[in-house]
Length: 126
Image (cartoon, rainbow, N blue to C red; front, side, top):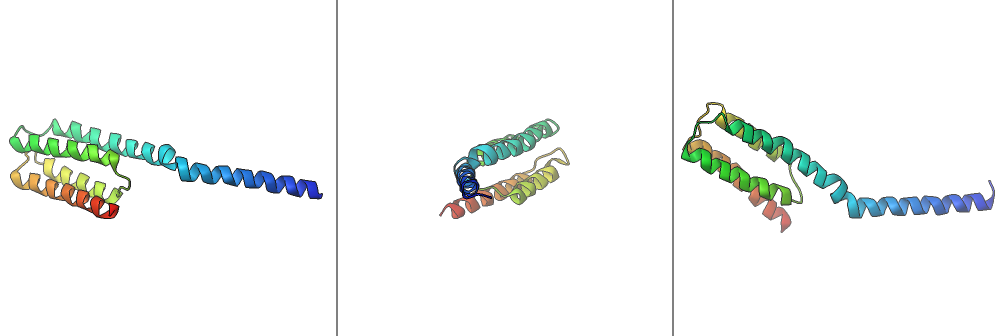
């Protein structure tokens, strides 16, 4: 290879790497993280709404809906999210609605898990 080909190769490689690192550092949230959050939000929280149609009306059902809607709003704003926590909440929720009745204990259990997740998010920010 001639010196000119080597220099051109180094220049193009350097430009390509610079563009790649710029995109990864500045656009990664917009192109990867936000679509992933939207997908998780859409797939999980829409299913939750459908599942609530099977649950009998009670004051705890309405309260649980309000708590989950509040959690859904804060979920979209999270910088970091833990799929294990979301899975735990989903499992607890499935357990709660398995008998089609939301009791006070069930409501408190879900509320405690969501509160712990919010506290973990705050501690990670600090």
